[in-house]
Image (tube, rainbow, N blue to C red; front, side, top):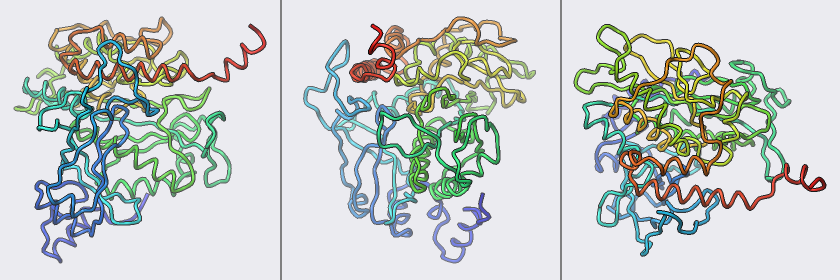
Length: 478
């Protein structure tokens, strides 16, 4: 989109002329606290946001002056922030869901490898993603970043490293301050609202050239790398693909990308939404996850045998996806609205089938060389917390390998015309999550108890709202 010099070119020139270590000019991340002090000073940063994702993936944390951040300040939050719903309410204790009787503090521990500027702020501001530990430094099992780290560590203990590449779909919509009115597409540079059926349309992307330039600009400033950007089938529905890499780093990027895209859209007077199904009759928004597993010692993709054929680990990973993904669907489709996307004839899989280059299956095997053999999970929606969606997807595959599960034969034709193999709603999905003891071993029993309690609380809040469908068809007919 832009003819500006690359970050690397600019960095090299500045470093050569200033004598400042090259690493301090990197847009993202430092190794030590001393480096952090210098990195912030070079940029004249006045404030820093210490953020961490809650269960919904919403950034929570504290903002402070840079001088306080670098003075070994202890940062704490109440543990209750991981027990409230997306609407900010605190559910009643049910089942295994309990509150901390003391409502004690948890501590924010900055991950200095994530430090970057906040490019949309008018004052020089930086941000850093934080891990969460207990008040005495003990491990906390239920925070999303820690859940994903737990799953990645299970692979590490086997000498493996998972590799992922998320694809995130989202809609641009006209600003709407009344939730009783349906969302509608925004006007593009032509002055007209863009229509659907614009899949892979360059003209569709060009309608929002200036906004997309800002997304690229904001991303470059934060050291976030976009692989490709396309227009999807829905009106003003876009998709950003990220380059493959470490699951925690990619979850961090999705976490920051969502915020970045929303801010860029607001700058242009429109909304960006990651709702799974924002507009009736239009395709939903997914977060497809490409995943493979590398042997740490050899660098070999364990999904491929030495002769290039699919390995037994490949098939067992698929078997684990088929068996366990329906039980973890609430981590990939976390809201009532998510299940409006997972309906027949709406461009989303409603099955647990797999197939070679078959987009009607939940688990697609893209065409690739053996070294790049991977499995695309097409079920997660874009409203999912990226840390939890990645943890769920990788956790299911891990269990498949450990248990030697075998998949069904691959689907050769359309896989979306039979019975629906997935939970049809949030409550059913939550019950399935609680039903498998092996999932508690992978994600921790404490996380599952808290997550299930919060999701049931959100469902009860939803049930208090009377929908237009009910007024339309029940008001005078029943």
